[in-house]
Image (cartoon, each protein chain N blue to C red):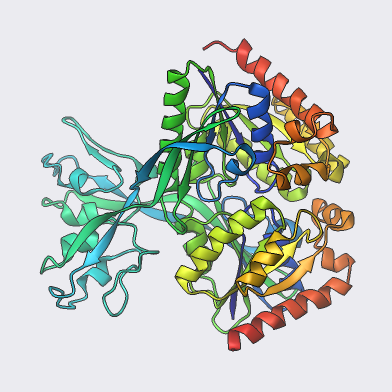
Length: 278
Length: 291
């Protein structure tokens, strides 16, 4: 079963839920797909067994073969290639690696080379396998790194995907193919607003979902009311506790120090399993 | 004109709370909400929309079923796995590159523009605001951020304002890059946690990469004084101006529930007072730099 953890709003506790749930069920795979700001490893202190670069393909133009016909620059939807009178310029950060320019060039003047945009780390913490990616500073495109992380999903295992915040392409890439998505929110106007946007995305993608309310006793009751009205299951509520915040600040998953929560995260997972098998 | 971006790396550290406070304190700045896929600033500043513009950020392939001979070339050449086994386009995966269009032997595929969101110009009690809403699940948030920033700049020029305050999104990828390129300064709002420190460092590296003057403040510093101290000394060692610590206070959530910036909702609170100090430090640093 593949369960993704998403949120819309940042800082609602996605990684906290992902890590504590993974620790509670044990023998699982945790994939941190927030490759812009990966944090799960800070809570798990994994032993890293392998690190690999993540590459994308970008065009290289053979100036001797090129006759400046401009078909490539007219084709490129991302303005990543510019044919000047003297030279052809490639803007690697804009390139989506679709390969179209190599196909359209009538003189076969364009080939591709690999460009590093991030890295992948594979390790373990106890009986958990942790895979996470890291986008290089200044690189805009998160999706290819997320794809690389997700290539390590082992079929048939319990897989937990920690998503980045927001509702745009990196989130879509992460949650795509999940059996279930847990949305972590907080009961505030920001939390509710961003939850509603994420719900729209998941409904369009036809991924079943439920909600975990973090810091459940702050703010107001509108998140709860919204979930009730829309028949969205509230799977778990985590209260605001200074102890939880302080443990997080020190990089300690709180269910390790507050064992009653191990049980609750296990129940959460079993609840999800029940909903998926329905 | 000066442009200041509020960013954080990690989500939920208090960017929008601080941006809204700056909006009140600045009195006449132009505001830009560049968190286009989960914008929240409008819930504190209540903009009245004056102008709406459709955002066509990307294209989508469309297969004409009456022409398609199901040869499979498009599926083979598409690097985004956007064409399903039964020759339908998966709109979530399609990046609108057009490779399928050129490989199709029977010209069954075209690219169509899709509306991926809207950009707005609005008026708030505290000045003009440019903002946007990316349609849920759409790509190209970076382009929409660029559009919002162009609008903000245009407003500032038109209204003779010399300051644009930009609320960024979490992360360090395309929308954040679009929010920080070419600005005069970036304020990183950090959280005193292990994750917060890690993400702060990456956000600072991003600012350095794009040559943006960095400032750092710690929000909810009393969650961990040790980590706050680590952040302060990290900034000192790296020559980064540290502009203040803001305490944790439930009044911040209360102000949010009431739809008000904290400096307006509870001007005498410790949070409001510290936010004001942070603002004044940044403002004087911005003013002392030449245009």
